[in-house]
Structure formats: C-alpha cells, structure tokens
Length: 416
Image 1 (cartoon, rainbow, N blue to C red):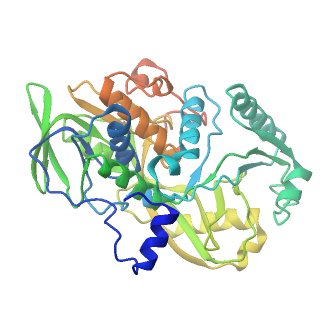
Image 2: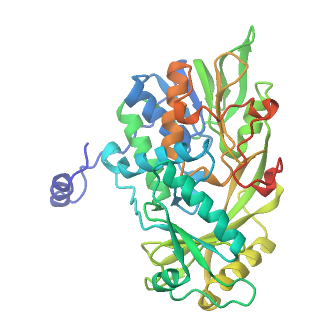
Image 3: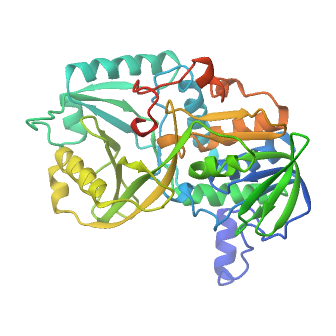
C-alpha cells in the first residue's frame, strides 16, 4: 500500500482497519544471494538499495532483536555533512543529499528537519580551525557559514556568551544540517526493502559463519542454517564479535555512548547546537523534549546502558553552555554500542575472505551516514568495486598508513 493523503482519508472513513502490515514476517529460506547480518539502519538501507538500484532482491536481513532495537533507535537523530577531510567530506555530503529526497524515495515520513547545525567556538585557535573546515566544505560545494559572536547571539540569545572559562566567540553553521526521526528511518527502509522482495528476519541471532575452502557459504543462526552467495556484515558495535566467527580480527573497539531526553518544554532551541569547549550537543524534538548527549563512557562494553559519571559530565557541559538547563529534569536515557575504529572513520570494504563484506567503524557518525552507507555498501556488494565516494574507507588503510583522522588524535578509538 502506498501512503498518501487519499489513503489516510479513506482509511479514516473505515476506522483505520484496512492498513496492511508495513513489512512481512517471512520464514527463512535455505539460501539467499546476499545475507546481511544486522537489521539496523545500515543493514536495512543496504538491502533497500540492493533491491532498488541494483536489482538484487534475493536478500535476507538478519536481526537478533526487534527492528530498531540497536543503534538506529539509540541515537540523537542529528544529520550533517560538515567534515574537513577529503575522504569524509564527499561521502557525508552524498548522505545529506540522499536525506533530502529520502521521504519521497521510500514513501515514508521520516520527519527530516533541516533546521541547521551550529558548532560553537570559544578561542582564536578554535575559530581558525572552524574557518579551515568551513573553507574545505565550501570548496567541496557544501554549505557553510562562519558566524561571529553577534550573529550567534541573535540566533540563540539564551547561551552563556560571557562564561568566564568558555566565552562564546562565534560558530560554524551548516544550514542544511538538522535532525531525522531515527526509528522512522528503520521503518521506512524496512518497508521499502520488503516491498521489493527482501526478507527481513527478526529474532534471528547469528551464531556462526560457515566456510568451505576459504569461502563463506552461509551462516548458522538461532533459526537454522542459511546459505548465501555473499555475506555482508553490518553489526555496528557487535562487528568484532561477528567477524571473529569468520576468523577476522578488526581494528575496532566497542564503547557505550549515552543519549538523553528531558521533560517536554515549550520550543526555544531552533537548531542543533554543539558546545566547542566540551563534548555536548542538543536539539529539541517535536514533542518538546531536549535530546542531547556527549562523550562515550570511556571503557569497553557491549551493554546498552551507561554510567552515572558520564551523566554528570554531560549535564555539566550542558549547563555551561545553557545555564537555564539547570532547571530542566532528565526524563530518560539510553545507550548505544559504538564500533570505534582506530582513526575515527568507517570501513566499507571487501575482506580477504571470499564473499565476506564489511561495513563498520562508524564511531559517532553512524546515523547521519545511513543513506550513503547503505548506497555505497550495496554498490560494493553488487559490483565488487567500491563506490567513488567510499574509496578511502578501505580496511587495509591502517596497515598502509592512510588513516582518515578527522580529529587528529591518533590511533586511540576512545578519543574519536
């Protein structure tokens, strides 16, 4: 069923009893051309573009929980393409362009809101760094505006501009950045992939990867063995665990990143705003709650929960930027397991094992990259050659000495 104003009107007349399920609940088949491990945003987007763009429809997406139970439903919904380095900038701009046409493409309201992303700076050195990044963005055709103190004050008067330690001197603004409803992205891609023949199999945990003569032939799961021509991993924070089943060790660590939402408030934050003197970012949802987050918890973990020390750290950074937040109550929090790579940039590549493909290492950037990640991964799987905007995301770049270190902090996953 295609969603439209007419279909909403007609179903309203029928008491909304004629809606069909958004996707099927199929029984697993014994063999697929492609099996994708991970039913999050990247796995579902890959399946969607495989079917839509490349005509590969005999595809299964395996998810060990329910649809949207992983990082696709555990993030702060921010999208942006304000990157400095050549390896990242074109890729995230491709993602931004796909976001802009996504709802019309898969006929689902993902609540794409291009309200703008503002990165504050607090020193001369940080201003110069943001100027460099903004110039790099403009050279690649990406929108960027450097705002001075008065321009930021006019846009966001409630910020603490005269903070003794962290005075706000200005900010780098990307007008096309914004937010998207995270779970709606999963539902839209799932519905689009399912309508093109892809099997989305939930409550199906992968327990082993079967290899014969050095070639992947299928996966052992909690719902039986499934053979495949190609196996694509898109397991986010569990990438190392799944890859280990094939004897593949990845340059990735798993860390927990917490996110929070406050009680509902009247609208007062129009944009996404990030604190340059500490890791804090905030936006306001359509329900009025402030959605915000900060640093990872700082130790390896596979648990979808965090610690109180990080809660305090995020709250302190938020109040330093917006003093009025001291009167706001936390409503709830959640944690996502981040696949932190050694240089802070992702991996989209074939592995040395025949028919095994890898999509991982997204660190903080996984949600915003969802459309481009799925498109480029589908291109790689279908054609066995990388998409031109993802050529830098090779697995062997660490051994070859070609890291993509956006923050310039070195080979320390916890710092990215």
